[in-house]
Image (cartoon, rainbow, N blue to C red; front, side, top):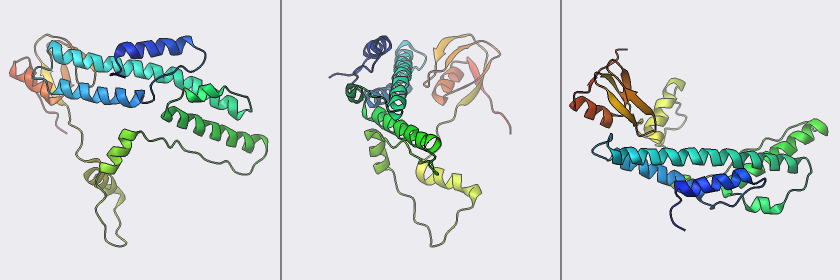
Length: 233
């Protein structure tokens, strides 16, 4: 099967909304779309003209994929929650529904079912404790990232990290460098509507103050359409 397009997602969404039961989707749909969105953002960020038709088209395609994926997720998740609750209440559910769930959805179904069953036993049967369950699905891509992530540096025996330093320690040794910050600009020209790499939509006029990714900010400054400013703390 080739790349999943926005047209494909639109078709899956229509099928899902028109059916009372779960419809079939590719098992790796979520992972494939996530990978495509990452690729499209990288392509747009690598463009020499982020305001040009090519880069803006890539950004719009990414946003379309994200919107369709969120809508599809919302419709399917509601059905999965209903199925899990029905099964926890002792109702029979069609086994073919389970077969229509992709791995992450099946994990969600199981944890909701187990949680509802545990709660039912605790509240209706007088069980003294309520079992706690947790969502445990990890996508293949996330597993690869986790395996490739560097381990924490060794600490001396009985070493303690002060609470106020814990966040910095984790950021430096686990999360890597902080995400690229936006640049703040004072706009002094009319700039037609555009989207930044994260899909935010802008339509700027003289006098506006806006924050943009550095690549976009640099171009506007070089074209004398905006002036970089700094906010003193």
